[in-house]
Length: 565
Ligand code: ADA
Image (cartoon, rainbow, N blue to C red; front, side, top):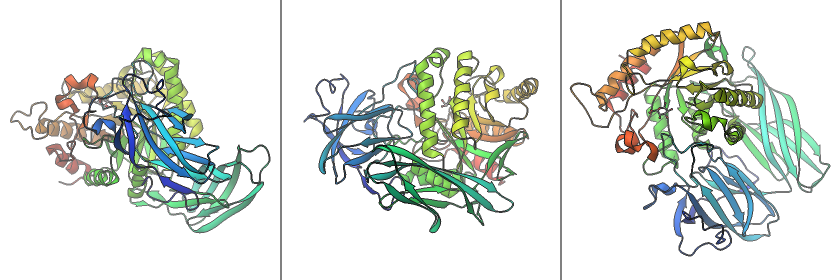
């Protein structure tokens, strides 16, 4: 299952989940030994979706690895869709390379042409190795680089004309409860001369257009349909997350998208959802579990959401990468507000200066926004996290990212999480200022937050940033599950509890702070580079442990977020 609704009724979609042959390639022999044509006999069977670091014996493996299975098709064209992998992917069909992509959190669609009806050999190479210059993420991160095909793989068999892409925009009049839809549809056509394109809103036909194709086989045609009126709009909002399905239909192909009608704007230091002020009671969440890595199953996603909602949260930050499409569907249905970002974490100046960093970052933003544009739950795009934002190199990258995102999506505010708020020179480029700081954990006393906030507000005033809302996007303390001390020492549950009680009390009562995201939801495995500073090789700042058992702080935060005494 990849989505919570059916994306295609006519298009033939087959799941390629299940057992694949698998072999790691630490010596990089696969290419020269042509594993893509002749898969090694000493390979093992693994389940897709899955991360190889959760297989026995591969706990630490980072590098290249190969997967193989067969698929069967009756059509000559197919889209192979890989919904999630880490790093690089290269796809081979019947011994020939058919496509590749760098960056897998927002998935990859690989179009294969010229297929004979019948069985085909599918081989995939993927590589989760990293460097300290221009991979996104870099080698040094505070989560684990789980490798593999960690989300579903699908085979979509394609007709002569198929809907390659669709972008739905709307203008919403909240007072009149009406919306006007604009659609941009990309149809790839191989041999038909005309098609009837129909647009449905739920079950109701909204528009029908005859499309005449001219040009060459394989051309992609853009069709624009504007100003489709939707009366009696039911808004999407956390308490009533109303959703609508938009179905596009051709004679033999179709595509369903799901949208919600809402506005999200920033005005005079406030965040407005449907023109009403909203405060974000949030938490940072990694898609991680010891038994699954990134391949978190739907049942666990739902449980995570239940635990997070029970905490009194209305917001989640998807730290630090695009999340599974099905998780975003869940958020849409449950009315939880989401901040999504690319995995650009902790980039120092030399890495920001590398031209490949910028190129990859721009491509990853585009992949993420194209995939996730229609989710009403996404209210903020995050540009990057804790880069050296005091530098000219950061300024150049931030400026380029901001311009790209605003051109791809002018409807959502943008931000990034800074760890150098007082010396940051990139803040003018974003709509919301988001701060990650750990006074009372890595340095100083927790009370320093108060003087910091005074100093930072003065900076905002001096630098003309006062109209921008402020979020505290990370604050937290490590606690080993079960550790309890009389003296409330670091690493104990009661230190964490005291820490979060103090900081939340400060932030929730500060009218200038529009949102708080606790670091973090659950304990997660960390990268080898950070292991020595992290007991158990985990980032232990979760308010539940990695098996989702609540620490003491959970109940205190719950009281504060729900307002319960
Ligand atoms: C940073 C970072 C997080 C995590 C956190 C911590 O703010 O963004 O991913 O590493 O610090 O626990 O120190």
